Amino acid sequence: MNILLVGSGGREHALAWKIAASPLVKRLVCAPGNPGMAKLGECRPVKVTDVPALVALAKEIAADLVVVGPESALEAGLADALKDAGIPCFGHSQSAARIETSKAFLKDFAVRHALPTARHGTFDDAAAAKAFLDQFTAPFVIKADGLAAGKGVVIAETRADAAAAIDDMLGGRFGAAGARVVIEEFMTGEEASLFALTDGKTAVTFGIAQDHKRAYDGDLGPNTGGMGTYSPAPVVTPQVTRKAEDWMIAQTVKGMAEEGSPLCGVLYAGLMIEDGSPRLVEYNARFGDPECQVLMLRLASDIVPYLLACAAGTLESLPPPEWRGEAAICVVLAADGYPESPLGGSIIKGAEADFGEDVVVFHAGTARDPDGTLRANGGRVLNVCALGATLSEARDRAYAAAGAIDWPGGFYRRDIGWRALTR
Image 1 (cartoon, one colour):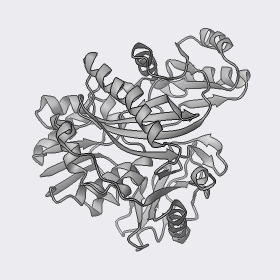
Image 2: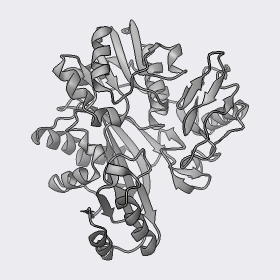
Image 3: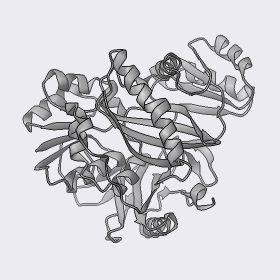
Image 4: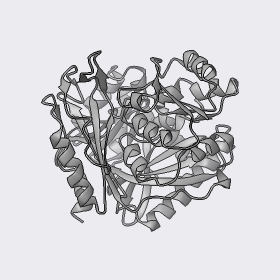
């Protein structure tokens, strides 16, 4: 079969790596792809939001399935256009993707369907938003309503900082994504991620992971799209998983279908866990990045039948996916200046060395010169991932590989996995 994979980041390289390993796949085309993905399939220079060009490309290659990686493509309506063209797609409709692309929509949906989550209010007026802060005590959670590349959340320690964040967002920092702000009560506990696949009727749990959002060791510095992750996450016990499945995932799939926006793809629940009970922080409508990377390393099953079943509405017919017993970890190598002003163009050496079968380096923000030189071309540039019998073993392998990469223009956290390793 022929598959078109949409995206160019580390998440998409991991998906390409897993899809290319399937015996069902004859041809893999990536749009636009990256230098790492180019070793697994063809790359075409089509933007992820250029819906007409992507539909045309899917027709050109006679795609049996289109797999959509980034949320921006879903927001642009790619899945809807593919459906209209009769092309199977693993990815939510524009309407269903609102579960991620509008935090206000999600919070209102959570209220309608009694999902356990934080109290909140939504505002487009700064004065009203600041007055609403009286409902809570510090710290305050301020979120841009729309997509902001994982950077549209501020945890304000003081009321003055919260007011400044409101002014910043409503003042245009995130453009249209910040035209409204959502203010939430601060939830205490430990945050982790649970993934499910759904065809709009059935949901299948598809892995757990724990991310590190802050830029620097010790969970210090600004929020990022994610500086590293590991799987499994001990805080997500079987009991927590069952509660999340029953209280959130099942209710969400049912509720979205009832409201005329059935889901078809990934449902990624950010959980806040306290005393063995999860509450919903947010949903994402796609695989996490870098969580996807560790899930693909641990997934023992062929992923393609699950992607096809979601698109075809036949997920119920498949057995639960099988997972490797090893732990997996991902260390993100980011360009100096990330997340605010990453410096591009620096030369990277040694990233494509053979680090052993238990280590995989996924490209995220890279570019290759005509002479083969690899350069940084983004904020998060490389994802060094490893498997191990224990998380400690996986960590040691990942950091050994990261340390062998010659890239003076980048940095990485050196404490990925600390929560699990210090339990």
